[in-house]
Image (tube, rainbow, N blue to C red; front, side, top):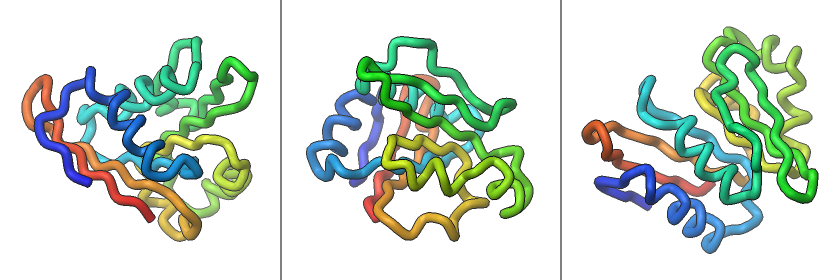
Length: 139
């Protein structure tokens, strides 16, 4: 699915479309250059999932855990700083992606070999200051 000239206010609609297509998808991989809006999109998605606390980039923490209204965990991972598969093992990466909970993963390239089950890739390209092109691929 490709979308052109999408603004931040459209992100919740994108999440609704994804859920309508396949509600069982829990692993979301976000790619795009620095500043393309990966964290901003994840904030919109977590808000839709009833996360009431402040969603922020886990660049330094690597993993942020949020709770929805039902106290169910939602994981937000930023793998940008990881250098090897061993780093993924050390943070317990497989436990997160096999938890059955939503996992929103920025910079997932280092973990490509872990994604064998159903997941979705969302590539964000900067169109202009307030506009993005979004390419969504279901796997």
